[in-house]
Image (cartoon, rainbow, N blue to C red; front, top):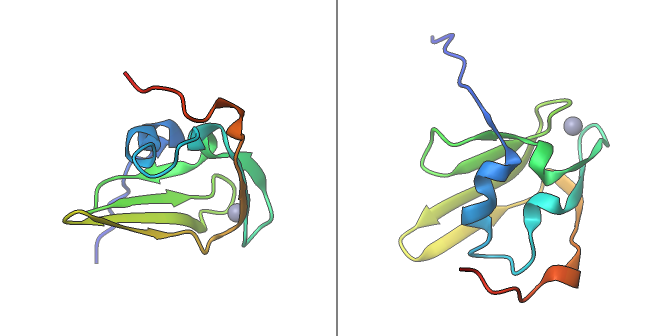
Length: 97
Ligand SMILES: [Zn+2]
């Protein structure tokens, strides 16, 4: 039984990892929590990076919105905690330096 509380980062901390999967900036995307219905930018999520992957939780209700796990060259993305993720494609295909 541990009462350890982990510090979380904001969603911007996942920008690097998510940019390997999505061509648009996910941190600027707007998503709806499937649990409480809150609509927020991904940059506002609570991000937990202490485990083997990344866990993004709703800033309002702490529901798990997104799980990202890397296994070798494969990435498992679990987004069932989100009703939707609205991506702005107007800035896609930008070159990453
Ligand atoms: Zn929520």
